[in-house]
Length: 429
Ligand code: AMP
Image 1: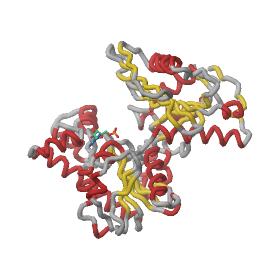
Image 2: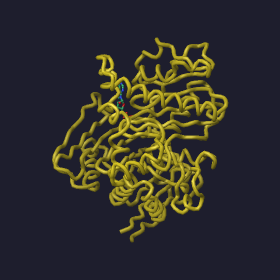
Image 3: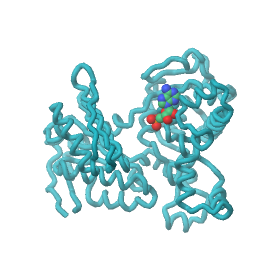
Image 4: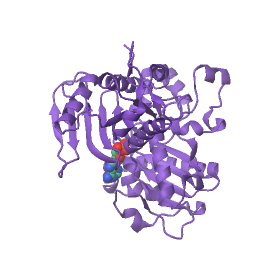
């Protein structure tokens, strides 16, 4: 193990760029932000890492026209992916060796109970993220690889982990615990953690802003409806309930995941259908939800089929919306008073029919959608409820990368103002 001696954070803080990395099992998404005005300098994606058909898409955003460059051909691993991204950034005069780079912020999916805040990565922090691999086998290993690769590239720089689970660690114990044997649950760290936390945090704060209030003053229900989907109940800026659980499988109907089902379905599939645990895992995570119900997981395609009279697509849509309504009702009860219901992510931001259908019939809860406002297409946060509605209904585009950059930069800045030394570049060989 080599550990670079800590350096004073002051040197880092004069630098005002943050690189955000979102490392998946076979992809890396990156964005370079200028924290002077929180603008994007470049965005990019490396996909199909390890395959012969790897592809890098890079878009510099500093010039006039944003023109995407493409590289194809095998990119062997995450280290090669980050190297290729760094070369593209360097070609735009944005090289990662720049002294202007303050920190690298990493999306880390599972932070368990330990990580309630963004955290500067040390050897010990990496070990803890590794210890959580059994509860996030698909995500945490890729996140760890991304961090190690970035450390090797800039060992002098603070690496900050921003956890998808962190926002949900404020959930009360009675919401987080499953009603199963306590010893078994604790021995295996089985509880509800929740995911998409970065998005729920950002969107609930933005919704308060839209209402002209502080986050502490409002209670909101956030519906993050992307290919993965989750709901959260946020009271006074703190998450009190969320729909995903030990894993992202629980809760809403998603693109390819079932969401809530009777757990006995899994025993049944094993005992009666003779399926293996891995087959059941694939069935519920990859072949269920909208795709399982109708063969498509893209809401645009489902709406097109419904317009053509396709009954399977119509039933899939109805099941999706019914589950949403149940969660809106349940979270209204959990919160007691609701100030806003907020839609976000791919489906939530773009699908007016989903928003309309999910809110239809909920007048008794104070919820109404204005058809004209709902039909407006915009990239801005906006209200879609009429002025007279007791509860606001809003659309707030999510921005997880900006939230990660903000949290990363704030952490580096806080360390600076406290005169602390920032652990940097600890590489575990
Ligand atoms: P996300 O995971 O947030 O990127 O969301 C991806 C999903 O958003 C896709 O699978 C689509 O179902 C949905 N989506 C994206 N654009 C639209 C659109 N214009 N109308 C309806 N759904 C959309």
